[in-house]
Length: 466
Image 1: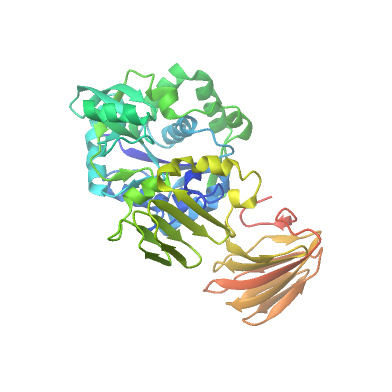
Image 2: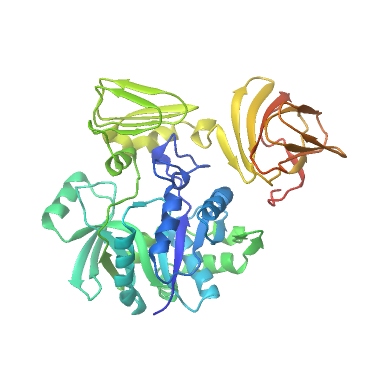
């Protein structure tokens, strides 16, 4: 049996879970209770007997989030960075090319990074059952037994039986409610899980057959890829020109080699707040409660607090999701339409980023912001440092509140301890580092005429940022 090479797709944005999920901090990295979905995907691989080092294809904006999650699981992974999002078919093609370069035509196990699957043993059993199908050249997808007439998932109609599962008779995109009810009444349908197993060469051959332009663009992007620290960066121009299509639309709905293996476990793509409510443990009144929540005479709600007390009285069927800079209140039944709300935000900062922003060296959080000042709490991980930089439009005051700071100002390097402070004049090169063993926390007060993040001139950077 060929070894299995896991390919984790980590490029989604999860906008329907706003305000928790945002483009710069998407749902696969969020903790919805019980750890992040990406960490859960990595953990699931440990149930497989014979898996190679996983490949992770992710957006370049999320590279340090992905790397930190892999490190936190005590695992290794090859991280491949997409310069632009091009949906799942190109991402799988890149993974197949990478896998064939590292191994001799392995079985590629394609896993979304943002799904919830609670039974690792059932997952491993389904993968083992699918191996013989995949080794014979079939493109295997995994089907979930439908629990209800769901309009947010695609469906797979099973055909004739195989030793490992079934031929695929038909794929159906997200149906209307009436169509979903008819499929459940008829029987013989699965939810489309978006997980696949096939030989890397088999997928590439079908992609060449049905989407040759996409296959050519992916080959060019991979052949021009470059190593950057612990990451592999695809060539920007050919990948940008690649058509953006899902693997279902580009290949699976067209190929005559598709098979489906049942995966009988609790599964959800957590694609909406209603899906979160259905998947998570509830109190005696049917509420999902996360964070500091007090619910009185409240029923069948999803209540998520991140920064303050959230209290409800006399309501039912609502989503209330609170973050430091935004609050969503929505009818649970309309939670699929949160994307429409996001579109109306335009260029507001709440659309894409949280006030708590992760960086490769740690994180920062906005505490207060005005016309000519910006106050942040900055956390620097042990052994980490910011870039050597300067600003054209702002000066900075740093106050150490925890740990030890190594501060470079011009040619001078000093150590600052708790309750000590320093001043960095406008236009002076400077750097902040944490030489200690505990996280360094400082309060930074910026003053000046322009206080946005693009007023940074970097001279040296451990993380390869320009």
